[in-house]
Length: 376
Image 1 (cartoon, rainbow, N blue to C red):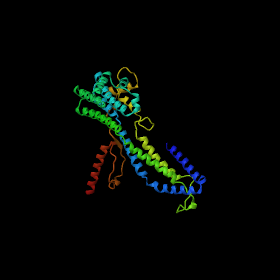
Image 2: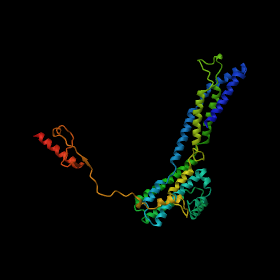
Image 3: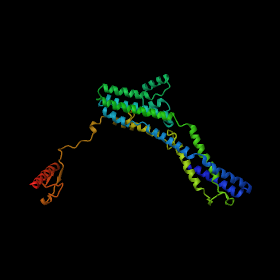
Image 4: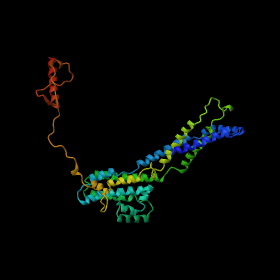
């Protein structure tokens, strides 16, 4: 909080001011005044605005890039439920398994980057208990874990791609274009997960954060002394100066610079458990919209996921039935004497209401007759 730093600054400022005004003897006052002038002269040599501004810009860009890398399976869920045809149990199982594999990749990625999700799913068995994968799939991942130490988030993506290819061979995906759309969206999720792992692995160097923090607080340490008001009788000020008992401008500088630094510190690691960090648990909960739960769990997760795997052809809104009505428009009568002065006009045909196309045709004919009469 910025208010804690401001309170500490005010307490130290008034402590030094009271000691200088009422406690120091005259010879010590002269020494203190020389030190104040020295601090006021050289504190502006610290490039706080440049260092802090560049640092905050770097942190905000990293935070926004991390947010844009968050994977969302919504589009994939729509494509799978639309293009993977079939009302039998096998088709439903294929649709649900494709989405489950993709959500498993996202869940594994979140567990690698977020301590909050890692605490909720500390072991692979917890993913089995939550319904993200089966026991046989866990055994495959365990065998791969013995062979390599690399992350296994790409494995469910490979399973999902092979399942889409199988659905295409069985005729459940009826066109190569639909298959390509689904495959591209699956690979897009994989790319987002890879980007998320990259943002988490390569962080801003710690020394840069330390340099910025030291620069900001050292600036205000010298400002604490350099902003002290000196005895006007000693003629240290070339121009008239007001003894402000409250250092307003110094407090404004403190508020802006320290507040800027606090913003950067808050956005530096968006995967934590603070209020301003990404709520990865909430994002992981949103995955259940496209998640086909395994087993006999009767909960909202299963209900919502089955809505996506069920065919929706019978749930489309019915189109209006009946004959197409012609667009009609009433046409008012126009005096014949005004016809010659009109660039565009409508004349009333025999019937009080005509279709728009018929009225335009009738008007065109009448205009041609008027032009012929004028030529004669």
